[in-house]
Length: 385
Length: 149
Image (cartoon, rainbow over all chains, first blue to last red; front, side):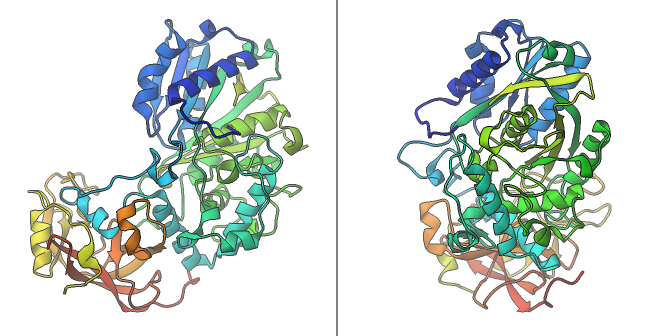
């Protein structure tokens, strides 16, 4: 993920990630009997081709899952259930995408939006200038948070600055040059209140995570990472009567579920890996998990606690703002590396419990995973990013 | 009204489902949906004629006052398609109509300065490139300052 790679298909990237993951846990590819593919912008391409590209002929558990950036956590949950139920013994979870094309802007990448007229009511958005841009949806949520609670752009900027600090220590990160709050404030405006540095990157890349039983993982070459808890929470579309647009997310439901399963409290969480489509997504998730009261996320994140040396390390690989954009697999893969203690220069000393979030749609979907190097359940994850 | 800037925007293409909506707009009337069973109002969504509240099929068109409050808003500076670049910056938002429905993302007129969450708005109607009339929202009265909940 550290270099821009073009002219490689998402399927080829996916195969490479699975190969590296298998090497990491010293398993032959024939050990894989379960495969879950993350739906993405090119989901049919990866879904239709990955099994055959991997040459897998004996799968007993196969599906594509689509809850946007919340999919990774849900996949961890389903794979764990499948293993517990005896439906599969080694499940590969895969995200791959290759939206970037050489010598063209991200706007013209395959995440680019449709142009031209559209029939009927669907055409209204084109007239208004709404092309389904994620930045517009999240910016409106942030605008409402600012209105209700007085949250500021500088407070959002503190999240971007802290994550870039972490990215500067990560060889996997796309953006490693440190930034200041002034850099954030002077970066060009995208959709108010979001500056460019409030927005995530776009990446070509793939991540594979291998899940197996704890007993089997213990026989592997690396220390297992245990899945201690997983929760889902899906409030659905934020634009609905009676809903406060983007103010409360599925993290309210998913966080406590995951913590309860892990038998820990928020005070036991050493590291946060929070899905960061935009800076605001981090702020609202931290509030919804209960690290601070609703509305106080701005002052909470602004004091530097999320950065290197802070009391609540967050997005320790730079996240998707500065690291790489692999949907929910960015926080999940960084969480696994931190749990193993193999994150190099950016390794957080205390890493017993890592809270990983995924968020999809426009805050429609949410998943939470608690990872730990300490055994507490019968399930385990081995992994390669 | 005919707004020079808005008249350069691409037109939606009315189809049988949306024809009543655009026809009413040409008469400066805002049509939204109302459930004949539970009476809940909703913004029209393509290919959805079932009430999200009570799940009864057969949402009907109903005339809304066009008045409401800005629920969420953003001024868009970056437009990911070349043909829109000349519009920027422009304002998009969600309006809570007085009837209770929340609009989908709609266009707001930015001419009166900053549009803010909480501002009172009303529907106004302007023609697009191909003379299809479309509802927009403009501020009718500024709301109170925020941070109070």
